[in-house]
Image 1 (cartoon, one colour):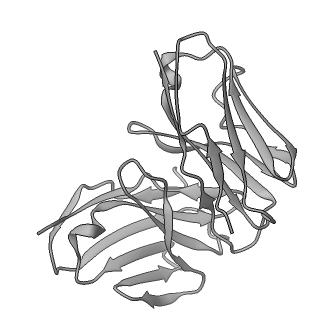
Image 2 (image 1 turned 135 degrees about the horizontal axis):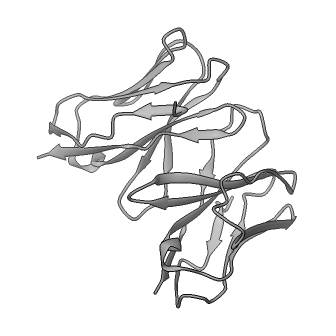
Image 3 (image 1 turned 90 degrees about the vertical axis):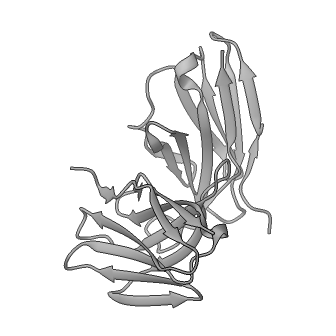
Length: 115
Length: 108
């Protein structure tokens, strides 16, 4: 079974541009998480979905960030407009079902650089 | 108070020694606990899960859980240079909580 698939692997963009990160969770997993990781702040939860519904978006830094999950096999994280402080590695992760003992499975991440 | 407290290290041990990593958590209702390993530039990967009090062994790794003390640890026996990585503890509550990670270096 394929793991969590994220694209692109690397994204370099200029300040002010729109950035869209994509994620395909593991088939059958119905909880999806978006994390951001930096050296200074570690792994931060941005938002998570259960059955395609956003459950907790309190970690989304500000209105420039938005996330959608239109179906069980696809999610996007959008930053508009992007700023240099958004530079980080963004991970998507999924697990079989909310409340279960199952661990999270991570994608390979998207390294975002905003210049 | 942070949900998960983890010694950020860095921790250095000689090859062949035992590395001990520790983590405390705040949510007494938590049921599931995990240890992830993250190599530089890579994503976190699950190495151990533990759900009940006591020890759980898997090869050179032993996870220890004490729910009364809200404490979980990871022991790595016969440490190898390939164990050099950042180790993240995690537990489930209303969501999935991660510690800040402990950087481990195994010195040949």
